[in-house]
Structures are given as structure tokens and as C-alpha cells.
Length: 100
Image (cartoon, rainbow, N blue to C red):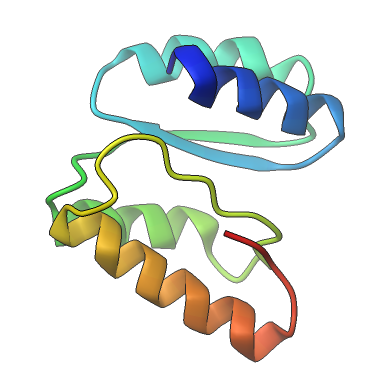
């Protein structure tokens, strides 16, 4: 919702990527509104990196879309974040595309 993560999201939006963005604070919704002007599609979610349930909600938001890039800023050691990385890595491997 701020700092390097928001800057990176703005660059991706400028490049025309669809975005699914998440943060532990409600500021993610303000960031989502800002990014909507640039990206084709923006989905914003509250997300607690330690919560597997939050990861599942995030994955539901992604749906069956192909993920070209997964960027994590913050606690990538939390159990939920690790689960997200594992699921996305497998999804990317099966599709033959994507980067973390």
C-alpha cells in the first residue's frame, strides 16, 4: 500500500498488467483506487501474511488467471506468505510461465 511495493505496482500498472494487490492495512484500498487509473484490472484485498485463510481468499481473487509475476514485500517467512509462494510456484510451473 506504500513504499517500494506501491512503486512497483505503479510500474506494473503503467505496463498494462492486471493487478491483485494485498496489504495488512486498509490503505490497500486507497492504493487500489490510485492504481485503477493505470491498470486494466485491480483487485485489492486485506491480507495477513500469517493467515492461510487470507491466502485462500487472495487465490480466489486471482481465480484462473495466469500469473505472470508474484512480488512480495514484507514478511515472506510467515506461514501464509510461504503457502502463497508454494501455490503460485506450482501454478507457474504448470503454466510454463511466471516469475517471483
